[in-house]
Length: 525
Image (cartoon, rainbow, N blue to C red):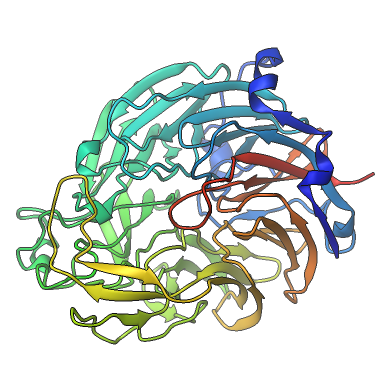
């Protein structure tokens, strides 16, 4: 098992500020990917946050496998020149990577790490909780959200800003930190910021021009179906989406994971199930009408968002959907009738049913932070894989006080013990197969490949490669900064590469000294 560090790899590194001026965009125009490519991505492409529309985070590349992974080495490095949250899952198309920091969007030659263009967004409005999880790539355009609640469209070839629409009022806590997804002539994004008492919505815009198409209220209002589930408490009531979405193209549906109601911990102001929070909501892509929903946590009192996009897959002849909730359960549903098939735990769970109190804190596991990535699925192995940030909190109720743009918790929480992490393997039916316990939190996206490798990263900065069949550690590499984004597998010029987003610093997971760094691995000759 190889254990080396990034400090030994200074020679191939590129410092973003020094390299950008000498790089030029390639001569050929970029007009894709189109709907057909998104439905059936080329093996070497990673076209969405979770690679494909169903969101299974499976790469069909097999050049790197369990037998040769010990030859893996750093191929090149790009320092992006920004500190802060770095939680993107790089998108790859025809050998080119598109990656974001909080304010930058960068196109990168995947085979050399040479930057091709960069766009820096200057916030127009207040930023509440700066973060960004990546882009949507569609018909020659790159779409991304901003921490001051804007949605941008950039030219994929040059980085030129094409349009900019405001999705919400950032002074009230609205932001767009999740990666948009685009398909069928539209780009879809959702409000983040439930913890400030926003009234979250899902938005659809025309991919060309940014014309608004429809909105869906995650917290229903007025006579909308579901508003009765709030008991009159659907004001400053939360409802958000934090990471990305999945699409069921055969049914014309977009599947949105939704976050917690507000106030987070004090629920007396919002009696009822609090639809459509802590759920997966399926909407008709063309109209935004509700098709169906499955709610993981009715009347959430612990900030246990359904923060990560679901993964759609077929196992045992049944279409299934896997959903990793922040409550530490992996929910498996039958897509045809939305029946719950299994809900195995993947994280430590303690005192999950103990009522919170105002006079003394309650020790609860999982805590309120973490878990912004969901499961990966390998059809050849018929296995699901999920990672976990395993840490507990002391939760205590406090009178909720709403102030626009400020946290609206209705309580307080403190870390209670040293955090660690898990990576677990399950069968497609949800039966546990293996588990790996990491000394540090695992918040990265989990990726599985046709080489039967499970790829991940931890908060300490280790890039991890496990055997998908057994969970055995095959390779580790110290990247130098916390890994909280996705791990992308792609191909350029016939070579398989692995891109890791290292160096995240955020309130949830890491020290502020980290710097955003893209580390690309390949097999040594």
